[in-house]
Amino acid sequence: MNLSNVIAQMISEMLDGKDEVEFRRNTLAQDLGCVPSQINYVISSRFTPERGYIVESRRGGGGFIRIAKVNCNGETLLMHVVNSVGDSIDEATCRAHLANLVYRELLSKRDAKLILSAVSDSCLRAVDAETRDKVRALIFKQLLITVMNN
Image (tube, rainbow, N blue to C red; front, side):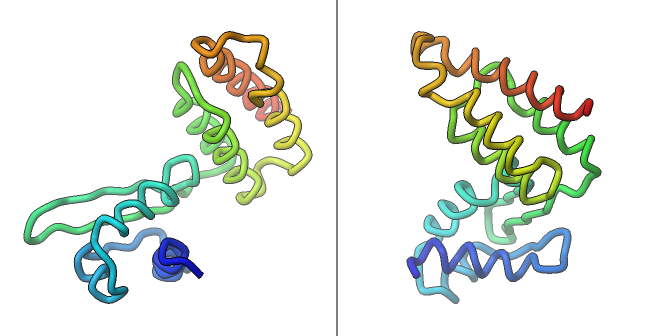
């Protein structure tokens, strides 16, 4: 198992059964025998809002990192996703949002596959690259709102 997976697993275990966890980045890095920037990388790539986490970081001598799970009902979480999309979104971020919604059982695998198909780069290849992420955001939000209303 690579170091990023070990770090992610350790943080996930710290979160197991809790709504949030707080730790010192340097202490965790020392415990794992890695550089603190490796901890930052894992947090920024695996504990994202798209995956249902809120991260707070405070630097300095008494600094800490706090990771909290977003806990809300299904409709609120779907609206959070719709609102967080903004004016543009790439395919990978759509995939992360959908995986989180499936994991939380707010969206079926079938619906997630259909939505991903509709917002995929291959489906939107006729749209110029500059506009593609904007069109994808509009389609993605509309499909999520449609799913929410059913």
